[in-house]
Image (cartoon, rainbow, N blue to C red; front, side, top):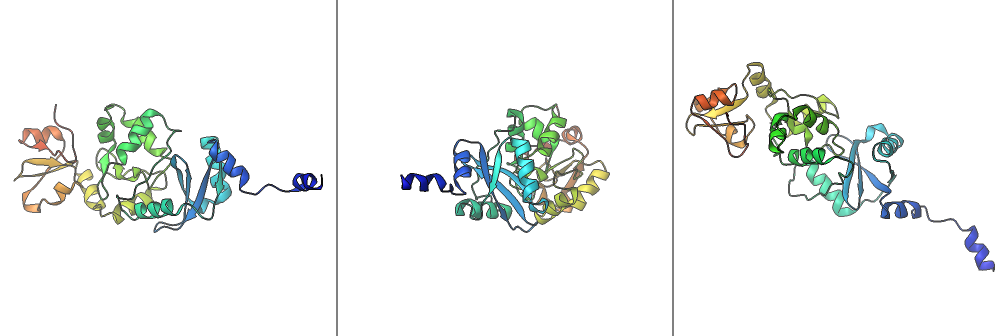
Length: 255
C-alpha cells in the first residue's frame, strides 16, 4: 500500500508528454543552432524536418506560430539527433550530399511539387517562377508558385531564395529581401549582372560558338566569354537567331 501511495505522489518525467505526443504525431521537437546567417530554430519529427525559423523571434513566438500553423505542439530539446544536426549544418554550408528528409504534410500536392522543384535548383544558380510552374506541368500557375514559395515551411534548407522574377530581378523573400540577396551573393550569384540584364530587358545568354542559350546563372552560361556572349530578350528572339535551349537549365523554347 505504501508503494502505491508513493507512485501516486510521484511526478511523471518532463520528457513523458513530449515523447507520447511525438509518437502519435501530435507534436514535434526543435533545437536552436548557430549558422553563418544567424541563430535558427529547426523543428523535426519522425518524418523529417518540419519547420525552420529565425531564432531572433524567441522560443515562445516560434512555438506559438508553429502550433497555429501546423495544429500541433513543438518542444525544445537541447540535444537533437547528432546525425540530423550535422546534416543540417552541412546543407546550410552548401553541401548537397547532406541527406535531409522533410515533413511537408501540411502542404498541398501543388505546394509540395513546387518546393521539391525548388530543391533541384543548384547552389549558385537561380530560376524564374515561370520555370518552376512549367517544370511541374502548371505553366499558367506562376502566381500560385510564388505563393507556395512564400509559404515554404523550411526555407534555407529548401532553397526558395533561388527563385526570382521572370525578368531576372531578385524579388521578395519570406525571411527578408536583404537576406535573399545575402544568400545568393554568398553562393556566388552575380546579382548586379542579373539586375543589369533585367533593366535592359535581357533574360537569356547565348554562345555564338555552341548556338545554345541559357539562363544567365547556368553553369554553361558562366563559361561563355564576353567575346562569344549574345544576350536575348526572350526565347523567340533566340530561336529567330538560330539558337536552341540549353538541356541543363532548360529555359523555355519558342513555340
